Image 1: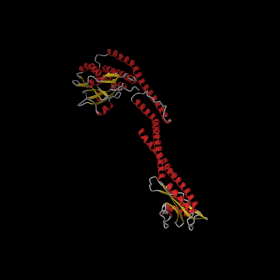
Image 2: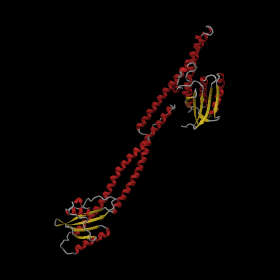
Image 3: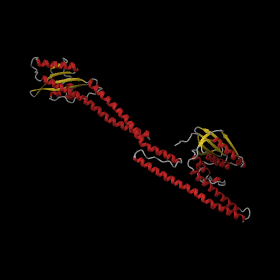
Image 4: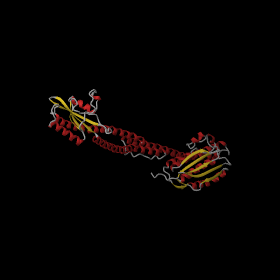
Length: 475
């Protein structure tokens, strides 16, 4: 979720920074040019005051010489071309010598003339240049033309025109833009760090909830969430989750307690009933079929109650005593213990695979699970068949596979095997309660092991007990 949320925040932050950066860069360029324009307006106003009393008909005098001298010094010092021109375009004084109004074309309208001619036309109308076209840093040939009218007797007698290079101004604008870019980059890095912290703060309760939900789903019903960080909505969600988990644990605990108590309480009446059945059988002729059927059903009910009690105890056991165990050694012990029973049934029980394979498991739960699996395999394998127990270490787990030569299960039956009280309709004549594999699964799950089923070729069923080879998480 973080990888999906971060790009969205970064795009939004980048959009905000760009939306602020572009207007800032534009305003800086405009402010830089406006400063140059204001400076040129002041210069043209000073030259206009010098040219105010120079007439077109007067001979070269001290005023005109002074004006020319000032224009020459101005050009030499700043490199700015400047000139004073009569209304008809004739030159009163200009520097450098021979400089004329740039691109003067009286036939063209103001918008079709170059900047110098347009500024000259505005000054002839009695207006100072105040808003020349913007010059951008990438316009190497851009220049700024500023003109001011020379007013005498209330009329425009001449025009002062300056034509300034923009290299220094463009350099200052670029440096300003570079500072803005550096600031934007720094702000983006800060925003990225803030986004990382924000997403971490928002998603931390979500990750904690996900981990707790996974633990509860795997059987750790005591898992809870510490709702101390994150937005208030997620903290309330964490409190609700803890309440739900507590109610679920309480309900399951009550269910298990009921099964255990009911199984325990029914044992005494059932034992008394079986005793009375035995006493009644003494009064009946030997070999009475109805009495034999009652005895068999009574014993079956006793086994069901015992298995229910074992299942409740297995689910209530909580955390198993997991330790480093030689799985192959445990398998060899259980195969040796069940071999006499298998031989009595005419079934060959074999042990194959590795002779040493360690994994992390509860030895008692693993032994009980193997007992139930081997018991089922021997029970459903016909006389003359073979049951093979194979131990192998693969990757991060050790697998104990028990393959029998019985009738096996269909695909539909394979999906239900291990459910409580479930038995195949083809196996109803075989003794059992349908709880053995459920008890095995509960015992193995407490130690982190797994139980799965698969078809065995050409016939039969494969039961796989998987034990992890890595130590369980201490948390």
